[in-house]
Image (cartoon, rainbow, N blue to C red; front, top):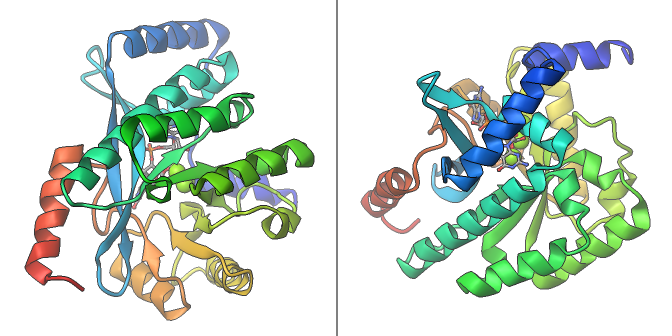
Length: 284
Ligand code: C2E
Ligand code: MG
Ligand code: MG
Ligand code: MG
């Protein structure tokens, strides 16, 4: 089963073919140009309470339109290149600033919705990362509780002392911390006990097979039970069907995000759709 881990993960997440060196350099150059000429944008995917359907948060996801292709380039394609070249640090700073300002704007308009931002390992490792988060929150006057940082398991596997100190500093600020793509990282579970984590995000690779696939069902059940035992929040990614939603709710996972409700949307559209819906249904 161990040897099959990686390949079955691949099956769940079809990864684009690795690019050759020249294509990587070209893509890296294009990203630098895109950031400088403001061609990146953020889209926001709602996160829902499974029982009421209410929006309980949104995740900021990076979008990049390529005029040559006439469509967006997937972050799954360009983020790994940006991570390899180090440019992810600059992109990540931009994303953090944008998302925090958007959340602050929503808050001023009376919509207090927490915004989740993906943080890359290299970004997290910058010595000034915590100061930067604080400065960004201050500049936008956003209460720290309305920012959630999505960390990957790879971040939590780094040298323990440094990581622990940094996570504690972030928790001290009042920022929420989530583990993204939980269950895909071959990690020791020990970190869940030691680190001030608030929430696990169940990878959509495990949600896809629900409710029929027995091993996916067993894995998701185990994650939900563990989260409960450790008093962590838990949310399922990639919820596409009502059957998946019902299964999750039944086993005690009460939050989800996925195409069943909405893909990542432009900020204004999201606000229209979900604050109007909230008004229709009245305060829950
Ligand atoms: P992620 O953080 O796990 O984000 C969830 C991904 O699943 C998003 O893909 C989202 O559009 C997609 N998704 C949501 N619901 C469904 C569903 O029901 N079905 C399916 N099939 N997919 C769904 P996206 O936007 O293409 O992003 C892919 C990955 O790229 C993200 O995975 C994240 O790891 C990375 N990424 C995106 N934006 C950023 C960013 O600003 N910074 C960093 N460091 N990484 C980012
Ligand atoms: Mg994420
Ligand atoms: Mg995720
Ligand atoms: Mg994922």
